Length: 100
Image (spheres, rainbow, N blue to C red):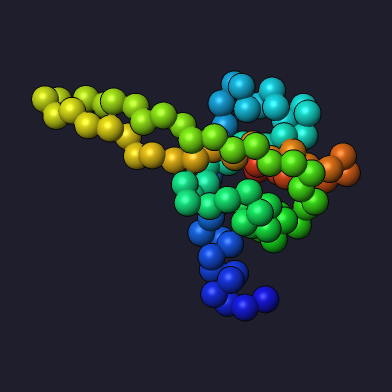
């Protein structure tokens, strides 16, 4: 694979989102990731399949709303991000938690 394409695929996926709601989704073989807000579903699918060596069945995306934050007397917003819920085929899994 071309180095530029490989670098682009690795930059699409920012980090996994681990909350109570997303850990319940793990039972349905669905994983939740924070992705670059400019990426689309085909690019997200390529990135997930390349990074984790799995087969993606379906992808749902949504733009999370910006949240207000106050630090001392300063008011601002958290950065904007896109959330991707990835459904894998029945045989594949992603290990998000280390076994240490």
